[in-house]
Amino acid sequence: DQRNPEHPDFEVSKAVIDVLKQTTDARGESWEIITVPAPQVLRDEEGFVDYSYINHFVVNGGVIACSFDDPADEEAVAILSAAYPGRTVVSVDARPLFARGGGIHCITQHQPAVR
Image (cartoon, rainbow, N blue to C red; front, side):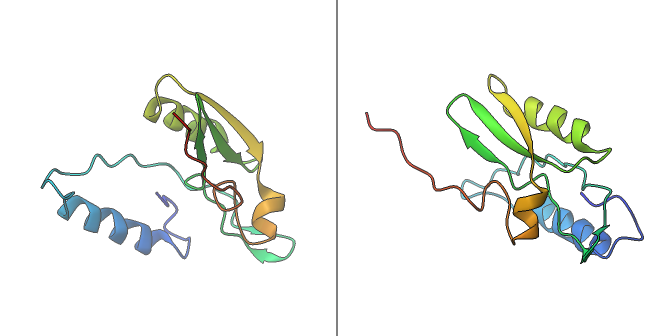
């Protein structure tokens, strides 16, 4: 949810949310849309950054979330904590990952539990 009208993703973010509000899942049910703020940081020493809290990873009993030393970090963790009740949300500085083209979710591989 890009809330800064000066950010290049502002209009795109609004459009994506609008599309999701007009669509349903395979059962015809409306989506529960949980908006998460975009980090306020727009640039680093190399130019524009594409930081996102959406690039998180759900693990057994927990969630590994991105942080960026950004004012929105705490709000994002609170929203993810509410979205995943019963799981512990731990944030890690993801700037080195994003500098190389990905985030927490991008560098992980899902392994289903064996039962």
